[in-house]
Length: 309
Ligand SMILES: Nc1ncnc2c1ncn2[C@@H]1O[C@H](COP(=O)(O)OP(=O)(O)OP(=O)(O)O)[C@@H](O)[C@H]1O
Ligand SMILES: O=P(O)(O)OC[C@@]1(O)O[C@H](CO)[C@@H](O)[C@@H]1O
Image (tube, rainbow, N blue to C red; front, side, top):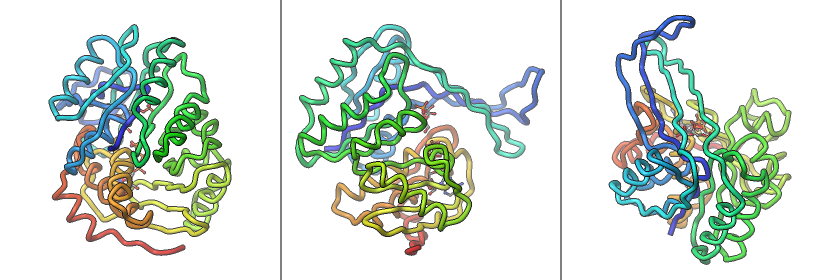
């Protein structure tokens, strides 16, 4: 079974405007509300691929209920710790003129020590050998920076595999727990290591540097360029197919879904990366944080190019 853990889910509200400008009222020409938060996006992509998963995390208030209902309506099992306050709403404003966007993420509701202990207990009860766990997204207020390490230790002790997809301090402080995979984008990888990320060779070196911090494998995603994988002392570049991009937000989560899909079916890390690239590209061609379809993913997969660096 595949489990996703989203400590800080979000209602994603996207508004399209003709052009972004400041100190004036912009009028939306289109809008969309999606069930967001990185782990939930992974669960939605997996569903689109025909793969079941269970979504865990913290949820709060009416927005939390809405996300719970939405996931369940997609036939995704949910098992949340309900906390006080309100699950956040994150807003994106996208320009139809040039595709540029502004995205603002709320911090999320405060999590208590009791909430933290209850989620760790739930995860400990569910973790079993052979399962796959995706821990994804930012830490809401009240969550200690090394909480992911605690969860990784619990899950790995049960014999399951863990992907960690987070950024900033949450990534820096939890690499040492040795997750199977981390997937920063180039900007996050640069922030973590301070190293340059301009060329393929530099990105491969950054992947190696991150791997030396603990993760077994590292994928550095590069938006429309594709991604670099560092695994087993070797580096690989997977080039993404060309698509008509609609909105790249959430493409990284779909990439993680594609990689876990491949690995859980017995693929090599390189083959799983190609599936991740196809899923990321499929989602980048969708508006809002809608995810790509299986048919789209299959077509794009045939176009992914992989080379050793
Ligand atoms: N415009 C695009 N064209 C083709 N493929 C894309 C495009 N944008 C994203 N992808 C694919 O999706 C993958 C993940 O995208 P990206 O690097 O933007 O992730 P991210 O920054 O983690 O995104 P997010 O945090 O919004 O989920 C890329 O490696 C690439 O394969
Ligand atoms: O604030 P975080 O947890 O880092 O990111 C949350 C978020 O930006 O990530 C997803 C896209 O990857 C969106 O659904 C959501 O709004």
